[in-house]
Length: 341
Image 1 (cartoon, rainbow, N blue to C red):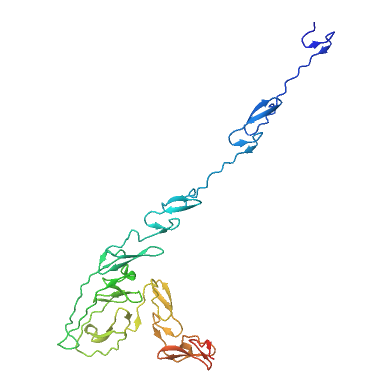
Image 2 (image 1 turned 30 degrees about the vertical axis):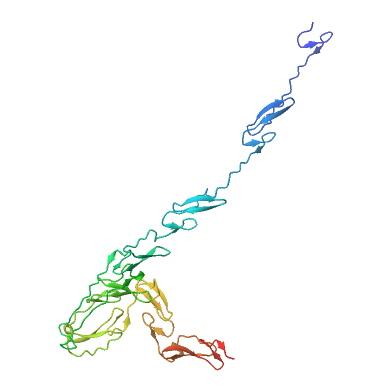
């Protein structure tokens, strides 16, 4: 009888033990997969995010597209998916595809039935009489005063009366009221504010105090321009002075007051460009015009001062104070740009 581990007729052969083959010995399963022997083969049980014979392939999960995932609506708007696109339900006061624009007129900030007009940066209230202010919250005083001079130049049977008209409608240029010293504001046809000043003030914005004066029957020989009224100032040794309207100033009312800014409408005339400076609106006059607002046309029959750029040898002249191109034979048109026949 042979010892354990040997056999043969004379126990000459060593018995070799063979280890059973283990197909999972080399850990063939990847990415945390579990290997299960299957005879001479194996099987991998993969985590939920991997697949394949050895769990070598990552499982990609397709998430349904959500157009509202990036919070596309602004200013508190609610995003509503509609297929592959979205719809923003905007809160009160905002509008736009993404609620990106603000509606300053909702709710209406203008009081007293004022009309709100939306602008790019805010709103403007158009107030009905007798209201004014940024939000039509102020009441304009409509008291009409009558001042009788102690001695009138027109004799004893009449009197000098100052009776400024009340403001009919206050619109955009008068909000807020630019007139100083309790002046009333009105809007002219060219959408420019016009101030009605108390008796003791004058100037474009009622910013200048009038000189004390008394009217006497003495003849006033001052040549006042632009509707200015001549008066005699007894406190100035009986000298003659001009009392100018709000739009003009100067010793003879020869200069026009300058507006504060170029908005909301260009106050410059005759196609002049307006530039807002620290001292107010400045008008860049075209050739042949002058004045604070370029309101004067140089009535010189001279090509140097005539504003039209006549073509083809045409000459710019004034006809009844209107610049006109005098064209050579065979040409016509406003600038001699059209060939006749």
